[in-house]
Length: 79
Image 1: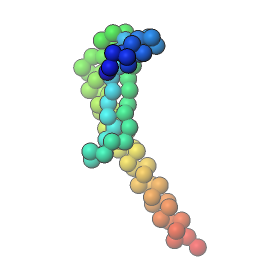
Image 2: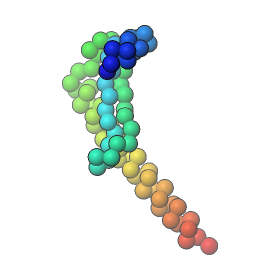
Image 3: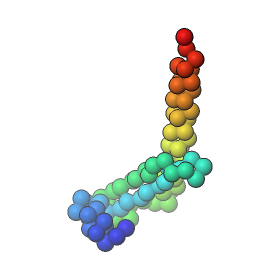
Image 4: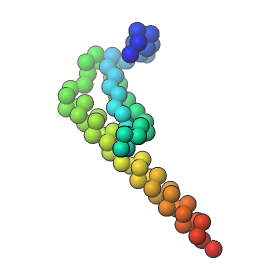
């Protein structure tokens, strides 16, 4: 974070911030943020859980895209 970004987060009372990329096969989809008012709030277990949640979010987003594409394809063939 830049000093300005860090100062902005401090103004909002954020003491800890963790960011987890949500990716599907190296394609960035989103970022999952975890914030706390306490400094150094996240244990290694919590950070590992955040990474695992980001992976599951990526799978869910991918599956939703597949479902939407399947529905569009079905609508094209509907009479």
